[in-house]
Figure 1 (cartoon, rainbow, N blue to C red):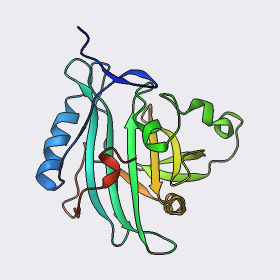
Figure 2 (figure 1 turned 90 degrees about the vertical axis):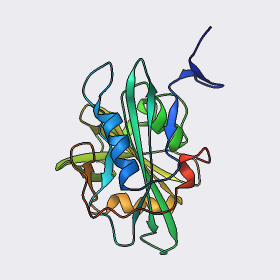
Figure 3 (figure 1 turned 180 degrees about the vertical axis):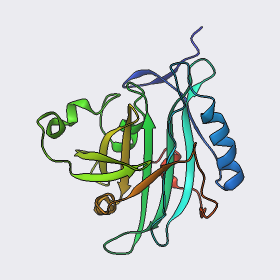
Figure 4 (figure 1 turned 30 degrees about the vertical axis):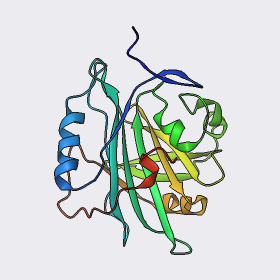
Length: 204
């Protein structure tokens, strides 16, 4: 008997748990789960946009892990008006330990880690975008993703940090000096919640 979840391409993977709806109470329950940490160490961050851009809402939350390994990755979705054409846009923020592969799935790149797609970072090229993660300047590099989205990846607190946006033109939002807060440490009472994001339920 093998209880592992399996991907047809990558083999054994950790199960992804996504809440059906999102509100303050549901977010609080997920944070309690994440705060217990993983078998490998401290809790994985749960990155959220804060302050939220005008018109934006939190639209989903999830985590990857099992009862043996604990929470190894987190994901939070936000939705709002695109920065350029003002049409609908979505962004997914993923924090994960190396080798998990959740961020790569949302980014539309193969394999569990983005290393092969970070030539610019290895060559010392300037970052394509910068965010502030828990107050710390955090460089992000663009990675080649599926045509319908844009994806940026960097490192924060010793883990991969992905920011994946739909449609692809909405990646401009990442270049607007976004600030991220770790919702495990602090949850602003002013967070606004909206209808569930389709990108957390298998359509990515």
